[in-house]
Length: 476
Image 1 (spheres, rainbow, N blue to C red):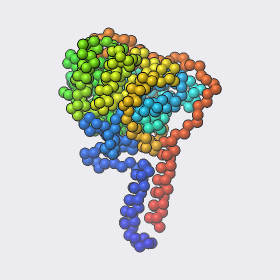
Image 2: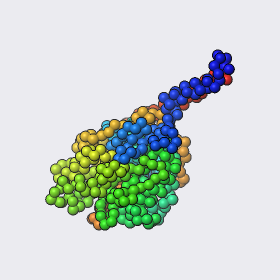
Image 3: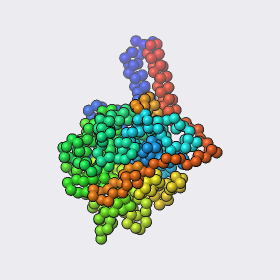
Image 4: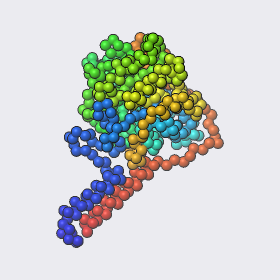
């Protein structure tokens, strides 16, 4: 008996219940579904999972990804581009102003080498990045995105900073390295509500096959190996699998041919995590027969349906249009194609990340103009016509700083061409910056406060006080 006459077992039960309710309301202890149930375990963040062609959050609410690509970490600058002109905070604010709820953030495996020194950064405008490694800059961008309610998809865009590769491995970057780096990132950002997915490899093409069973070329099997390895470390991520270019003699854009999914879908040990991703471009990247067809653009929906749209129509899985874009939005062929594709995505509620925020994409341009300050009003209007709300804004405030407890590991995408097309230079889309613009010594970067760190610290402090009070009551 306790001193107030209540049995000790009952006191423990009541106190445990109070603590559980308080901890869940504070976000300190995440609510999780029963093990073995049909509903996946809910993450500390949005807890995204798939149901047919939809993406749902931990509450069962439908989520749609509508955002942009911001490239640079995958290049030999080892930092997001544009930091020679503006602060990283300013550029994230631009993403916010567009209404984007997600950033696809490309990287290369070379980024994680100790010899890969970030460059092309104006440290007068980005003083907090000085002395950071590329991985630490990635941490910073992710943390800043979380504060703004923006999710992040990590995109393994290149094995090294020089160029992307046909297959997921090269003679310099092995499959083991590819997977071990993904494991590292999955551990590093586990529990971080902003990082929601892993785009396993950008634009498999050339020798890449789907469903062939050849261990050296079968991209579907490689995606399963990498996806399962990631989910062993972090079961909350979406696993994003791009297509190839040539399937059974049918040639399409690099990464854009997902016809093989119907015959050989990706199988993962954790269910409801696969999102398929296609890339699609216009004649500004490479001229194709369908652009000159007499029934253009009425012929395009059928082409999109055949190569990747059917996955949504048949309720197989969600689709992310991971890259698409072009310079023109006018009445010419490229503008007509771009507006038609955007309407197709909007009508079918397909997820997308537009290529790109950056203006230095050689064959597409960007949402920003060459000064990195002025918005392309046409592209701004296009994207504003179809944007979904943030889905991490509340969860992000209780997130631990990205990668704060993890040590650093030891120490420009090609145009997506259909096979046989006249290829443009792989350097076109991502052009590195070797000499930053002269800094403005009169500009001072504003002081920053990490809201996520503050909220997380307060929650942990309240939790510790509750525990202390509880055990004193029990002991008393």
